[in-house]
Image (cartoon, rainbow, N blue to C red; front, side):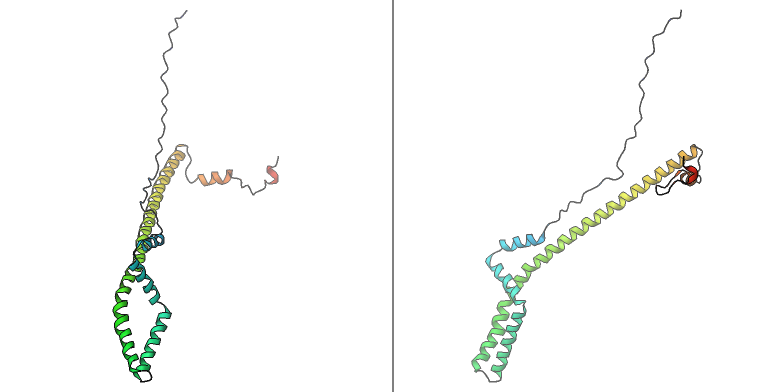
Length: 194
């Protein structure tokens, strides 16, 4: 009888796993959209009494009713110059239009324009950041598509290599697909029914 040798331990099989890595790493853009209308409204509410008066006068001076009232003032001045109204009216209209309105409204309108212009600045700043965010996203999409293109080309080359190792040329592949493919919309011909 033959001596049985103890069975040698079988080495464990090593499994080679392919570690999958993402094709593209997303880098988020740090800008978070904000409502500049709410921000500007909050700034106006937090501003002082003088700023609110300046904004109110600036908004009211930019109306057609103010234009009509200034036109009426000019007509009253013309009637006074023509002598249809007392001479005191000429002096009062001149003082009101040349001194009071111009000297008082000029700084008030400047302050009002600065405050109202702040809204335009906030809007422009937000639009810039939103545009940069969109540009960043488009750049990342383009990089992702380029990574996918490279991966698809790599897979295509591997498939061509595997097909050629199996003895199938790429030219034969469309014929194999066409011969074996049956459209779900086609009805089998009479010769193929069993």
